[in-house]
Image 1 (cartoon, rainbow, N blue to C red):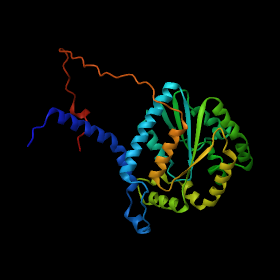
Image 2: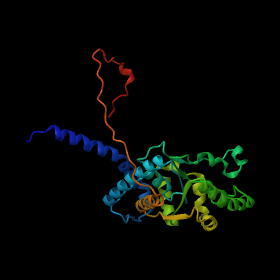
Image 3: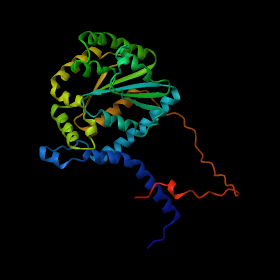
Image 4: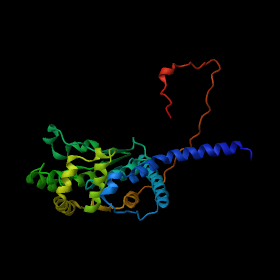
Length: 306
């Protein structure tokens, strides 16, 4: 048996660190592939991504490295970026947002997912509760649903009157032009999936205890009102697709393909470039010969079950 060198030990440790840093993505992929026995008996449909899994991981990591460069450029130039993610329930918006934020600094890139408006917010100017979440210089904000709730769910579910919807369509183009004039880059994505694909994804949520929290009463109602959502979506895209902030449609039936395509497209929308990074030198630890580490009580430690 060959003798293990110090170099081999160091390389082995580095490899373990790299594997650990990639485990989060692997865990999410395993979760996506997990399917309950009960659901298997409901449908015998088979699905295979058009992208090879190895190629998917390779491209995802490459694109995420580019996202880090974009982040550094945003901070360096004081750039302001807003990305809106809209689409039907279970269309894959959350999966893309997870992959975008996965390796970014949460102090630079944050996700905004607002709950239903309070009574006070219902009596505010409609856009008022969204404005505080817009970015300052050097920030990226991802809206997991946005002010377009009024043109979608609020309209279909009759939470907004016809007058309120008409006012929204009148106001939103100018509101977005104001955002852009203020120096904020605004990118809008609509995630599109078929009726059958949404049904299958909802079935996964119904029969999977880990994912049932994703299925709200509003999601269930959206199945009933599929055609209503289609009608208002088409009108929304027509009335709010302005040159200053156009819509981009992401085909979402293939999750892997949708993630890569969306991230790649987002990178093409921002004129980022590589910025100078200061060299980091790890300082030597200072040893104090007079310091003696105290022994802490066992009760303070988390039990090592694994």
